Length: 166
Image (cartoon, rainbow, N blue to C red):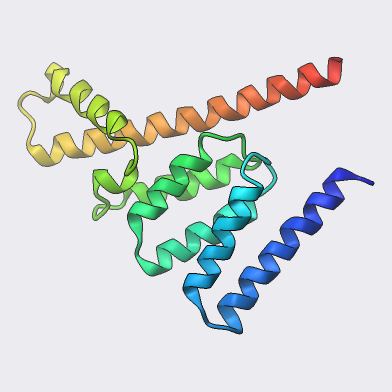
């Protein structure tokens, strides 16, 4: 059996079940629970972009921005296909003026502390306002997460080439 057809079918069933919960049962919590379960089962499969997007969309609709940030952070640690589309969505979401730094990187205070320390140590920002420094920290976090996403995809590509050789 072709594994990509098998995966496609599994992902489709999860998406259909989540849509059923959302549209027929009108149960947002059940919908998110189904999506969280699906992404936990298919977590390392790079083809589950549609599930991640659905889950991110649900959290955005509910205004759960810390959850959105957590999901993006998790996704960027694994090699997801079509990561550029997710990165574009992340950058748009994270760059909005009302987005707080703690929402962008909610479960990783080290990243936030590291970004803040780098900006504080940069002499170019000594005379800047707190708002300008916060914007610089936000930009640094966005660039850092983008680099992590690209690194995970690069590592995945190397692994695929290695497996093809063997």
